[in-house]
Length: 310
Image 1 (cartoon, rainbow, N blue to C red):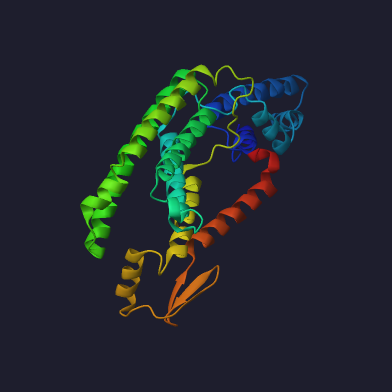
Image 2 (image 1 turned 90 degrees about the vertical axis):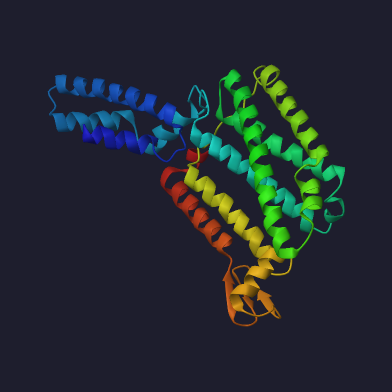
């Protein structure tokens, strides 16, 4: 049965099919192959030839594998979140959070409203929208959709407050700024908190009473691994840090000065690395990771076909 197992693995692996569907499909495909094999054995073929003919009858792995995924009754969704999906959802929420904060804090067009009601309202919108889309893409049970939206938003809110409080304490100890005023502005901003709660409630209401009635439901095209998700997020965060170094962010500047043992007087950079004081080189680690992920994606498409990720 090793030939059947290898064939089934080739059919289902690396297509982003979730583990629940994959287990059901493995059983169904193997059962079908066994029936084909028995038919060929009854015709007088040897076991080796019967297995080979059964596989040939079933079809080429790429064509069949992509077709199977396209026609999954579950739309490649889970009945409920696993721990892996919760980690991915929270990670994507934090990625959006950091990108949003970076754009509004350092882009010239947005910097004027980075501490206004629009900033906090928009931040709450993009974060809750991220969890709303993620949960509706991944889960096909309406009750569990609502549950996971609430859980993920509460978990994000608590983690974000703890993280920002610690970040402000560390930053304040380095820069000497007031911890109380920074904590009040960024951690306990009532506009952001109220907007976050109301938008979470809106997400729950829309999911419960609207999403199950619309004719088109979001399809979970590709079920990423936690590793690939985390590597992508890390690459984006490293790219943001690379853009901030050395003058945009005081803490990073202090760290670099501590490493090189002198003040920063000269900086030259390109997309791949920067040189500080004509001696200290900092590579763009985030871009390197992103390029590796892109190469991996190209190789995956070459092997499995573009339909494997659609």
